[in-house]
Image 1 (cartoon, rainbow, N blue to C red):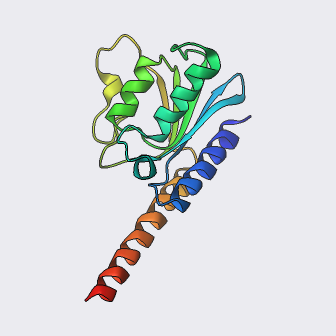
Image 2 (tube, rainbow, N blue to C red):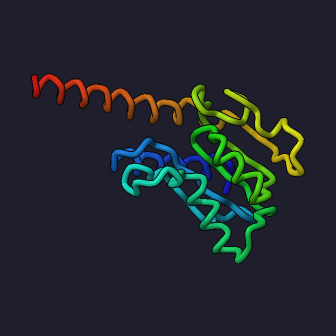
Amino acid sequence: MTDEQCMRRALELAKQAAARGEVPVGAVLVKDGEIIAEGQNRRETGKNALCHAELEAISGGCKALSGWRLWQCTLYVTLEPCPMCAGAILNARIPRLVYGAKDAKAGSCGSVVDLYALPYNHHPQVEQGLLEAECAEVLRQFFRDLRRHRKAEKTNTD
């Protein structure tokens, strides 16, 4: 699979998350050109702050490969990882991260902070902006719809 095909699958997962009322973030973990694990946000449905798309994909990859070191994998994610997910990428020894949209509020690969610029023992190669406009639009549309829905609810209760 190409980088674009992998990110398009991550976008499909993000859209599935949005349909369930989750912030639309999708992630796929790839080894040797094949997707070995996927993830999507499930914080609302799981009632768990740890249910991020990246963590689901990393957990699935660890199970698929029977180990915690994912040194042969690439992680594709539609949104720049937060500090928790960036840390998990470090700890899993993922050598390459590809993400779509920047996250000006929590992005930890350069937007708010660059966690990978710190002197850790592992530094993944980071590639940003793959299908950035499409990834960002899925998020914009989700939050636009959410604001519209909340406004309508408020109007109906007044």
